[in-house]
Figure 1: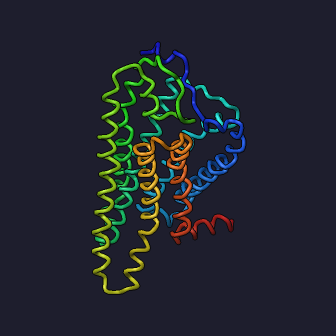
Figure 2: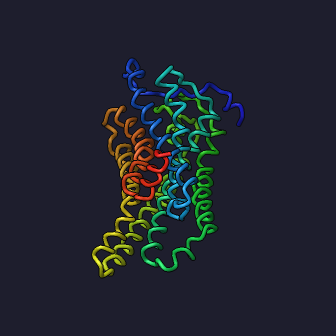
Figure 3: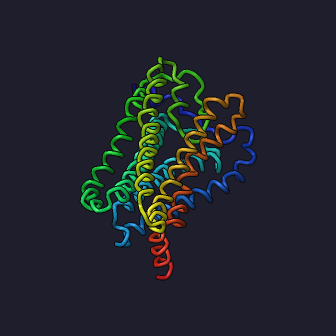
Length: 307
């Protein structure tokens, strides 16, 4: 097992054919990375500092921001190292750990979005019982469950990577490590590693999306039963931010899946670009969406700027 760890390192890849422009490409990447760090970091600070935001809805938002922040900090070092100084080598252990964190956090993010839809369901469908249902201890339990589901479910496909032998090319197709990239380089039976992720995606991303859609069907049914048009609009408005984040996340998931499954004839740079969109667009957009659409967040931002 350990002999493979000390074997020739994997080689990360930036944008093939555009190596001369890597320094220029790094500029928008750096701006986006800093924006993601500042946006999500500010959200976390506001939720911690402002007692008006100490509610289940914002605790779940803090989990979302924390997830986005961590996945960005996981990918940022290798991406910027490739683009800035063409440092492509990554040791096997570091590569497997990066892949493990990246994929685990994708499932965590899907779970957090599901938890947020449950929060909206309880708030709108059973408002009188909201505080008794979503207690602090229950929010913590949901958060722990979401994190454990993400990180435990990725152990089975990542662990075999440590004892696979890699006798083919060591060149990966991205500037960060992904399970599907690494397993293709293995000189071993990777049947389990091919099948397990498909089942996992069905039981997490797909199932989460179905439950979110179902919860919003019930929410819409409840809202349509409200007599006052103003109250209906107010109830729906509390869901706009969450719906926007769900759409941003799942549209990028579907886009990436579509490109990988049906875009085999598309230029390799398209596949790489879609991967970056998947990992950077939701973390970039989520703080913007909540800052624009949530008055409590707006008030907290104004209070912070006026200090």
